[in-house]
Length: 397
Image (cartoon, rainbow, N blue to C red):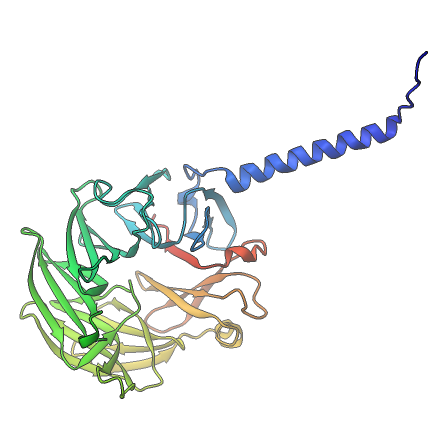
């Protein structure tokens, strides 16, 4: 006795097609989201390299944009997390995390490799991230956030000469490092105190590279110069220019004065302070053609001469900026000087109204503020990548 099974050919074909579509979709998602980018093939065809990452999850997304905003190349780095610094260095790009000790280097050929700071001391998967990564006079400077383990808060400043130079380091206790530069074989590092008795005060550490010792510590008395962390302090002739806000240490007086503080690296003394009106909030400083350009968060620019006199003031002339960005939660995240061109990265939050992309780079003539071009950093409406960290740099040709 046989049982006859009715076979619906049409239905079977539909089921097979559905299964194939599902498998192809899963494979596609796996290649896109889990696949690991190990090298850029067209890095030098782009104008900007941008890294999008999240604070607590992986992967990170790297995108190469042309000047017109077209995406040249993109991909995911599976171990990338909280990548907040993207620093050009000798034809390479150093990409560092603020959450882990897993960082990356992109070489001049576009190859991506992992790097770990002091891996003999800190495990590659440790939670010791960087406060900043900066380059200065062929030196790489990293500030690692070690934290407080009962002996006071510790930052570790790591420095190396050239890409393959030996890494040296020094522990700096009781402070948070803000920025650093190298000048005449010494490191000048701006710090904030975290000790409650001198809360909000700060100063300059001077470190002799040849001995790896602190040779001077110059405090800023009574006042605190607050800067955005990792924003580079600038060298102007033999002087160090710090920009931000000066405020009284007395907590009852919360007035903050926008200012520049001028530090003489020959005499190790703060020599001058230039204050601005309260409505001007300096967030970037660039030097070009022996002039100092201080940029405010409202796109106002103050031009100063070598005597630190204000000789001109103007706004970055930008109708798009005026009509959309500042009114929609946009803010200036970074500036890059390249010849007479000022590249300004405007970033938008997830909740920015009427904005369909996470950021844009506007290029101006730094001497006049005249707009030259705009590059919109679009991501095909992938708003989940607007996220916590966006690092941008200009691709060096």
